[in-house]
Length: 223
Image (cartoon, rainbow, N blue to C red; front, side, top):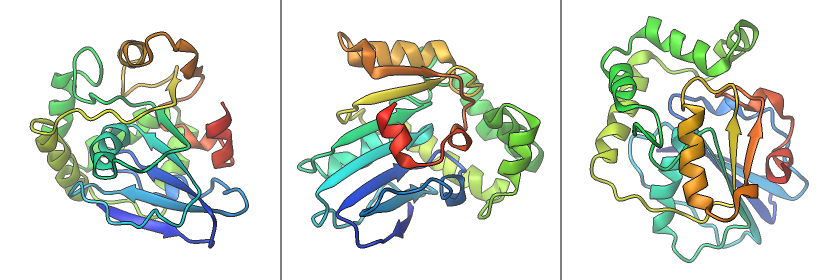
């Protein structure tokens, strides 16, 4: 995977796992709190994260879409790391699943048929409306369909062999306008995960790409 570290010499860290095919610019408008750094993980060609977390007093993890599953896998390599919070947005720990994620036929169809035209259609669906889609297409750092296919193929391959490792999620945000992860599947996954703590599931009127509705990371922690 690639990483981008916004180093403000802070004592606290926001650790963000991006969704598939998403550029870092998709979240770079979100303001950091004083004394806070940001580490963005994206473009998953492997599941190795090399980073020294030891200098941080608090670490807030945020994962979006496919990044929820990636975070589950990657953070098992840091078993002693204490997270102050872990927020999942529009994703689950089983992203290719007929009950708890994207139905397998749709997931595989996206992988098999991905080209520039179908990538644009996918981006239109994650944005929900034309205005946001236009803004999303103008984000810096967009990758080609070939590059995105390589990433998705790797993720799908890893899903066939990687165990499901659940980190301690503290909140799940479900966008009621999500057209990628079926809302009923997200609800099924997180209702099972949180069991008697259903108040940790937050329903919001958001499309799959949610970040245009927020101006700072703190908003995501405090929902």
